[in-house]
Length: 213
Image 1 (cartoon, rainbow, N blue to C red):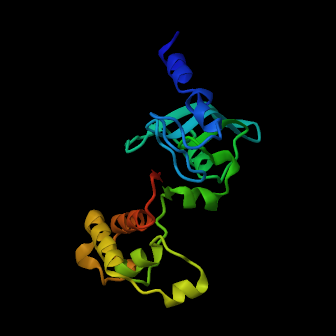
Image 2 (image 1 turned 60 degrees about the vertical axis):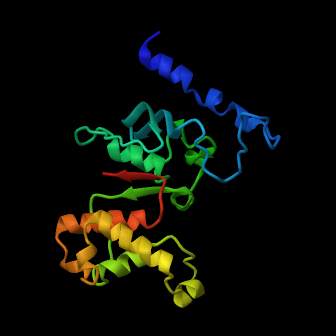
Image 3 (image 1 turned 30 degrees about the horizontal axis):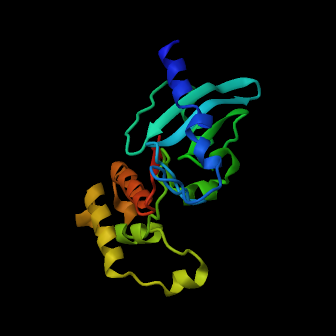
């Protein structure tokens, strides 16, 4: 058996997810409780993409793609224009529905059945090539606006930052290298700094999986 075939056999979804189908909670010793709607990475893999194919007017953008990403792993996908990199991310984030195959976030979340909002809310963030920021707000305000919080009208209007939230913004500004520019409007940043600001805005949403390209 070829190495890829062996890997597919070991990591087949029906094997990995078998225990999830049992509705009896709690599980016996040595197993863990699966809470509906929560990310389950008990097997160490955060993203399962299996046998995904996508066609556009006869052109096959993805052909039987299989990909596994472990929790905390950094993975670089490279290829020429038209190789299917953007289409792959579109499938993972719910923008494009595959013709065939499955995509799971953790053990239980079927991405092919979720909306873009539901996928983002579940913990998958995406960084686009062109930065999407609020140019006439400061760096601090951009991060504040992006913070994971109740975004309904009244909670947003009445919200005020607590110490923990301010510390979180400060930590992210340190990570993206813009701490000394916190009160500067985003429109004055260089292209590279705007890219980092958008990464910071995504980090404020506490994603478990971050896609970029």
